[in-house]
Image (cartoon, rainbow, N blue to C red; front, side):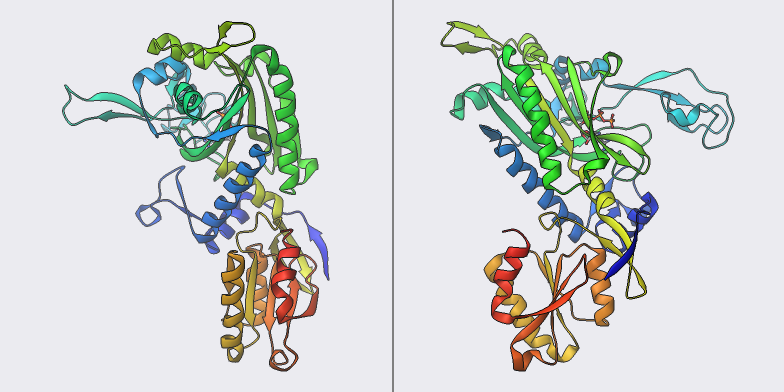
Length: 439
Ligand code: ATP
């Protein structure tokens, strides 16, 4: 039995676990790394796949939702209309002594430069966080474009395309999962603030007088989602933005916040965007983006409630929340207590010694084929080491084929959280696994 659970997670421990076990690597590691940019290894890719699938399932519970996969590059007029060219700035300040650059609103600089300690600064300047590029080869014919800083705008500029081709009626949502890019002045806290990251956004289009109830029901739905992921509820809260915090497009905003070791921080933003975006794109493109109300016989520009969460920030949240250190049989272990739906590997199959490899592999192949689940066959190393390894990557169940299995046609199943073991028949592994995973 496990005992003496401690809540001792730190960012450094997570970064090192992620690298050691192949969840996340610093991008371009062998060239010294690219600040604020990360690559995801096998387990990281599986965890992200699960996050995307769970999010998509959860928003589909909310009514009529259609998906979009927009381009990453957008021409300058899109970002002029959206207000990003003019407003998507962070205040920047440089230390005059060591030349390091910081966000001027970073509370850590109040006592002096975090790098050299001096207190002489440049004036505060506004820094636009979009990555700008040129489309086309020659300077005369080329045009300015930007990598999108949020996925939302490709939804707004496709609003009419979707409305006329998808047989949806207001109220409905357009959802998208995809990359976004922000030239953050100081990327930090690992996956918390990156320069290249992935967003999951839903824009819910409704009539102006439906926005308040839509906002309330989305707030509720988003908290239900985090509960389903089994995130510790005492570390989650909703926080309304004050009037000075609102983004340029927003008329009201509430954040879902998580209590990270570095404080309560935004995990997801739920914003009442009014009809700002469609109105702006209508004005700038000259295209009518209004909708005709059959009952009232008049046109109107729909209003929008937006829910936006980063795949990577949720990834980091799930790691922090699942990370546990405890002592089992007098030995310390690290365990990621992921909900089964989140866990990258659902079960591992282990021969007790190399001699049982063939029989174990036959079971593994059969279960993998029939369930299509992400499973692992883990052959080498002592059995204790292999259990520790599976604990550390959050695998809920381990099935071990031992010296008795040939005769009694049973394996031992071990539970990650309790470490309790029992014997079950080989024929019942699949049913047992699906039941334990809640399938
Ligand atoms: P913050 O205040 O933390 O910079 P924001 O208010 O600028 O966030 P939004 O524009 O509301 O963020 O983006 C929606 C979501 O996208 C955030 O809640 C977060 O989950 C994710 N996100 C935003 N910026 C980043 C980033 N640089 N790295 C990773 N995820 C991000």
